[in-house]
Image (cartoon, rainbow, N blue to C red):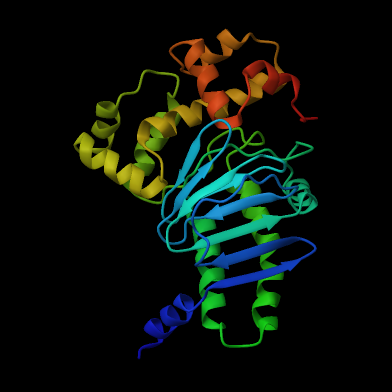
Length: 285
């Protein structure tokens, strides 16, 4: 058997493995993948779609996690698993670990709050794939081998979550695309995101037909082009909510939303709150 096939066989033998210390917990399991009870934890929880992905429910909406995509739940955010395909890969991180990572990276918020969005980022994907494969490679060795790797990986993941996780601390979308064609499109959108972009207009910049472009964009980012644009507008609007007295209508229109209702709906969908509550409950210094 080749080395690559042997590694895969080791991973497939995993049923349920848990590693934890004072900073967090990592769970990797291939059983109990169906509907579960509602949960509300004091930790940040990252669910990674390592194989077929799955679906989680919140009080605002259902979240579909695609293969190799992830979603982050905030402390005390109620959620429940509806199903996961083939495997569940979950990491819980202590609040202080995220706070220390944010301070070290110069983020000026007292407490991290992530958006309820499932998406793909290559750096987090590489971290998750390496940790998962390492556990598979060492599945027949003493647990101390994997425990040591996992304990030292929690801080790495905290840094990646602060850098690349969508949330209140971001002022722009984290860089994702390494494809030159899509990078050209995203750069063009960023320069005029307030304008009325269409799928045809984006595809024209990419020099692809709109169906090819939409498929490529979703494949590389985990989000459709229009959803990415709306999230970008929302993220770019956050500093105005936190640091200015502009009205909600002014902020929505300034950042490319066609009407204030669309802005309110998206913020409610992503953060579970209204713009007014989002503004008044800000924990930014």
